Image 1 (cartoon, helix red, strand yellow):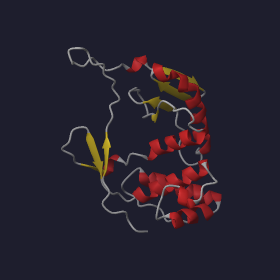
Image 2 (cartoon, helix red, strand yellow):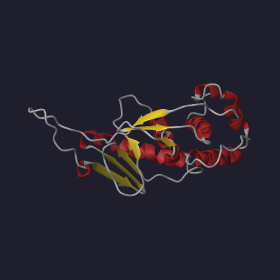
Image 3 (cartoon, helix red, strand yellow):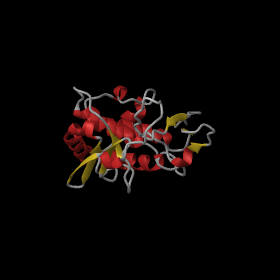
Image 4 (cartoon, helix red, strand yellow):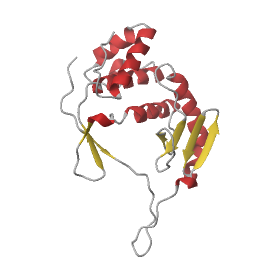
Length: 206
């Protein structure tokens, strides 16, 4: 499999602070995480700022679907939080305000994107620009894209390989989807593991 060449993704590290500007143009202190509204059902906790609290029930529903859909390939996430809220323990999966008309499938896909968006820390490159982080190529990066395509197909099984967001690698996606279910799951699980570190290359496709 050909390696992807020279891709650097500049990712802005959003601290999620909301500032209120006073008449003298000075900035007030940031909002405090304690202001967030949280709701917990079973093992799932969702937290948002009060002005978006009306979306908590919907996000809890989406979080349950996300966990159930991908329980066989990754640990079940327990915390889903809007940017700007800070919590101890594992890093939350980011959520946000829901636009009218947004489908459940789109929201589940957004959680997949959030979990696969940032490369591992071992691929981070030195940067002299405060607040900016760049990542270089690493052995498992192609596997992340194929895993994301497979996960999108599980959410929307009617989509053809051409509609799964991996232009130029449709044949690889087809091979993966044509394999027995158990082999697909094992391949995606290993691809996700390789995509989270810099030691192992992407596993061979079935």
